[in-house]
Each structure stands twice: as structure tokens, then as C-alpha cells.
Image (cartoon, rainbow, N blue to C red; front, side):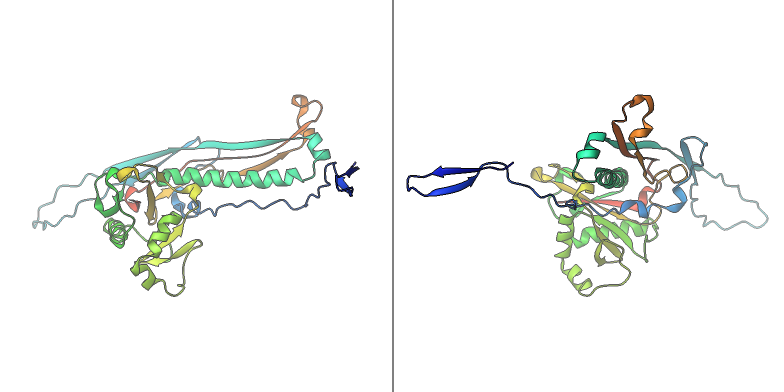
Length: 316
């Protein structure tokens, strides 16, 4: 309980000073968290996603008949040509499980000021989505088709920000590999906020994006040369710290077409499953019913199917 302390100062004036702890009002609404938009999973190739039936193991294989060389030699009348041998390549992928949970006590449930089960469900749901996004990003940004700023041979030589020439080179690499557009007739480029800032200062960008264009995907900041540019949260940016020229940081942008990667799982198990266990469900492991839990889990993997279908562009 707060008490008043009458203090006599040298001036002879009496003042009332509150010495006990001030009362504190708790707002019922929790402060909103700043969470990133998730981008990657919606661009997975459908034929290579959700591919494993239940009770059919944890590994899936994809097969591809390799293309044939062109045959420009005319047939000889009456002569049967030699038959061709077809070659098949195989890609395999094995799913893995991820998850996490939080423990809430019965005392917290009785005396706490906030609805912690609801809040825990929200924050763990956010963690599940962001974890899945980060796992996908790590895989798809690690592709083997690479272009570095100004065409330098190694990352240690990179000393320039992204240019129109780099953008056109990435576009040309996709086109020459016969990669199909991903959305609305366009390729997509996933870029960091800093790289996006560099792109938006290019004269070509300003000319192409003076007015809002139709057909942009969610998160796209604009379109240039048949490529839509999507900004990524820093949480999902691929960064090579100190690996550029003079120890500069290098950032990766991913230029992607259709059929680059898939997300194999078991009958939709890539989607995180949320679980709330009440204290009454603990059995002998929680005989006094002191703990409840909130958690999530999922089961999936990410597999690059066609390496030429994406180009990692590395720039300052």
C-alpha cells in the first residue's frame, strides 16, 4: 500500500512525497510483433510438392529422361539408322521433422495478467512459418548457377552494386536455358531491401516503373525487363559477410523461373501443425497437473529440381 511521507525542508515548507511503488495499469492488448512476409513456399513447383503417400517411407525420387542431341543428318533411302539409347537421371529427397514447444505453468495461468495460451500459440505459429521459410531459403539460394557483379570470377573480386547489365545477364541465362516464366509471364527476383534500393535508383527502373503496373505478385516492388522484384525480410537474406573485395559484404539475389524447386512432404505435412496440450493431459509425467504446452511440428524437405531455373546474382 502506498504511504505518504511528510518531509520538512530547510525552507519550512512541507511536501508530500510518494515513497511506495506507483500503481501500474496493464493494457489488455499485447504489443504487436513485427513479423516478415513469407514468400518462398508459394513458388514451389507443384509436381514436386506433397509427393509422398502416408506409410510409403520418408524418401522420394524424381526421374528425368535426359535430352537428346539434334539429328541433322538426312536418312539414307532404304537404310535403317542406328537406334538411340535414352539416359535417365534420378534425384532423391528425404524428409526431416522440425518443431518446438513452450511450457506454461498452472500458477501462471491463475495469476498471470495476459492470455498466455493465445499469445504462445501466436508466437509459436510465427516461429513455425519463419523457420520453414528460412529452411527453404537456405536451399534455394545455394543453387549452382551463379553470376557475380560485373562478371568477376570469384566472390573476393566483387566490388560493385547491382547494375542493369547484371540484371540482363541473369535474364539471358534463364532465357538461354529455356526456363519458363514463373508468374504472369514474368520471372521473379528475390532481393534484399538494400539491393532493392540500388535497383530503384537505376534510370532504367525509373523509366519502367513510373506508373503502377498490373499483374505484380504480393511483395513485388516493380517490374523490369520481364522480371518482378520481390523484397525479402533481412531474416531471409543470404549474405556473405566480409567476402567481397576489401572485406565488403556480398548479398545474393535469386532470379528464378518455373520448376526450380519442390517441397516434398507426406500428405501435406510441410504445413506446421499446432498443438495445445492442457495440464490434464500430462498423466503420470505431470501428476500434479502443473504444466500445459503449446507447440508445433512439421515434416518436409526442399529439393532443387532444375539448377538452370534460377540464377544467384552476387553483388555489394
